[in-house]
Image (tube, rainbow, N blue to C red; front, side):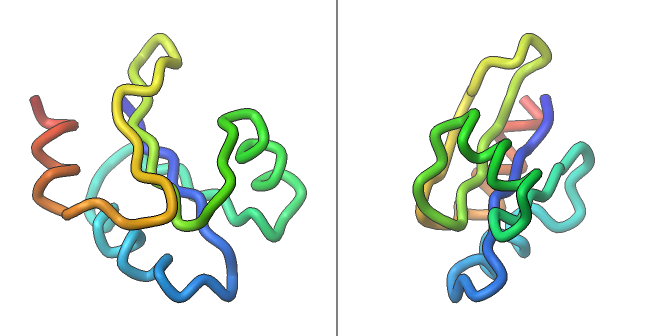
Length: 81
């Protein structure tokens, strides 16, 4: 599984999402202020930042938090099980 983290430069809630993902492997961070980040966000239908998606090996969304940050323990528990 990997994690996709969508942030925006001036997002006040994004630091909490970054902390929730800190120390985890396979985290891809996308800034929606950049064209590549915006394209990836569009693909996943992201309308708010921060957004954290957990994607399985087949590309399916297993879990997601849109417009808010997950609890770090819940996120770690999800990807380690």
